[in-house]
Every structure is written in C-alpha cells, then in structure tokens.
Amino acid sequence: QVQLVESGGGLVQPGGSLRLSCAASGSILSIYTMAWYRQAPGKPRELVAAITSGSSTNYAASAKGRFTISRNNGNNAVYLQMNSLKPEDTAVYYCNAFLTQYGLGPDDYWGQGTQVTVSS
Image (tube, rainbow, N blue to C red; front, side, top):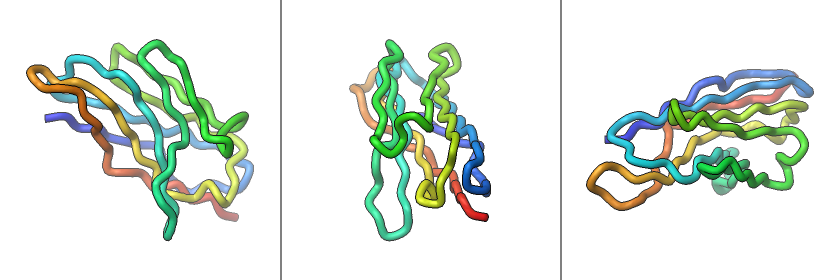
C-alpha cells in the first residue's frame, strides 16, 4: 500500500509564498516522476510542475518563474516552493507520483490534496 501525504497549504495574501511538501511511503521500489497538480472550483485538474528521478523539471506556463519543484529521492519527498502568489493560484493542490511497488508494475498514485487560498 502506497500513501502520499501532502502538507503546507493554507491562506496567504497576494504576493506571498507557501511551500508544499509531499512524502510517499509504503512498499516502494522506485519512483520515476513526481508532480504537483491543482484543481480550482469548476475547472479540470491541471499540471503545475513535474520532476523526474534525474531532476529534470517541467512547469506549466502559469508557474514558470514563480514556482520551484524539487525532490529528495532518499526521503521519497517532493516539494513545491510557490512565490509571488496570485488569487488565480487558489486551488486544491495534489501530489502525484508515478512509481513501482515491489511485485507490481508502474502506476500513478495521488495524495488527498491540500487547499491553497490566495486572498487579501
């Protein structure tokens, strides 16, 4: 059983910063890509940023220059540093990992989500 647990969401004023964390646990053999997605009310879930096991990164246009994704392979953790936050960044942020468990093939796993609200 694999679990992804996020933390770090909350309420922040426009222009502020937040750091999201996500830790994966369970019978994990290897984690390939880890990513952050977000879903605002009435909108589809969208990719915010992704990072491979080799630390190659990919960002949504809306996140470039403001957000930084990083990971700690030893702790099976991924982080999202969000700066210069805007009201339109308000959403539930989900951690995602594409990984292999012992004895199973690779699959996608999701965290429960953490709310980020940007408002004055």
